[in-house]
Image (spheres, rainbow, N blue to C red):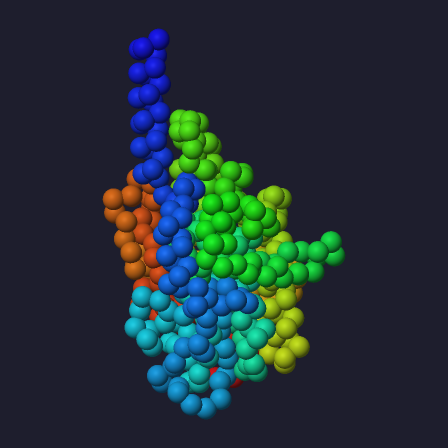
Amino acid sequence: MVFGSLVIGLVESSAAICCRLLPDAVIWHPNLALALNNWNALASQADEEVGGYRTVGPKLNLEFSSGSACGSAFGDSYVIGTDVGYNEGWVEQLSHLLGCRVTNYAVGNYGTDQAYLHFRRVQDNAPFVILGINPNTVADNVNQYDALLGSELMPTALKGRFLLDPSGRLEWLPLPHIDGDGFVELNENPSKILSKSYFLPGTRDGPVTLSFPYSLALARIALMPRFQRLLLRKAVWTDLYAPDHPSGALKLMIAICEAFADLAKVRGQRPLIVILPLADSFREKANYGEFEFASLVLALQKDGIEVFDPGKAMIDSLAGRSPCELYTHAHPAATWLLSPVPCGGHYSVLANTTLAQLVATELRQRNLVNK
């Protein structure tokens, strides 16, 4: 009995330590005091309609600070040009190549749904408009709280989400209106306040709640679909692009892109959806022969929506060199898990330059610009 109890205690202690060393994306054990402190510090900066930080206008283009724009762009940090110089982002380099300003309305950490909402409320009538899609926003679109996917416990990580009604039309579910105590309660029991969010703790694709017995929690983590995808060296959001995934993420992404394109046409603009491959995308392409977002590209093409996937051309531009040259952060210590593309982060200057050239060529070929 004593020996058995010691073994059980050792197993549970070891499992508890292992669980606590795992990233927040797979374990839900929120620090409620930290959550309240973050609320007090950041709640006033949150956008109550779209979620995330409150926007302050488009990015300044130092080369084209005045005059009318020939185009505009919406999206997240991969569109705004995070981690490179102010005029080294691909949208700003695109402006230089076209000889006219492409107004950059992108906002860091936005999902595709938030980028579309931002487009709806911005009065922009440039001749063409780009929606840049970071492939991992397929997860953001069905989610309402980024902390469920591993980010910090912050009010700026909250957002609403679109639902699809029985006819397939978009319905916006606003983010919850709560105070500091409500934010603590949300972190303590997310399903109570965010019942329509997909990645809730304890669900199929949500993080595992850290509780005794820890060995059982560890076993559940090992069986998580996103953990399995990581071991298979796939993007953790790959399965969300499957048409039959229970989240309905692909169908929702398609509907958002359709709504963006429809609104642009109503405004007299030509829309172009531009896919922005991540390091995970190139890793999956190398390991499995196809980008994870291929189903989205195919669906948009079938719907007659103009979409540009620069992935293959970006690979060709490297002339056999590693796709890691396109990103800002190398992860050599994780090569065994991230092979053959052990890197990540935002686009490097090289990637931004390459993408600007490819998008400029694509715009001309589609007669979206005359330059």
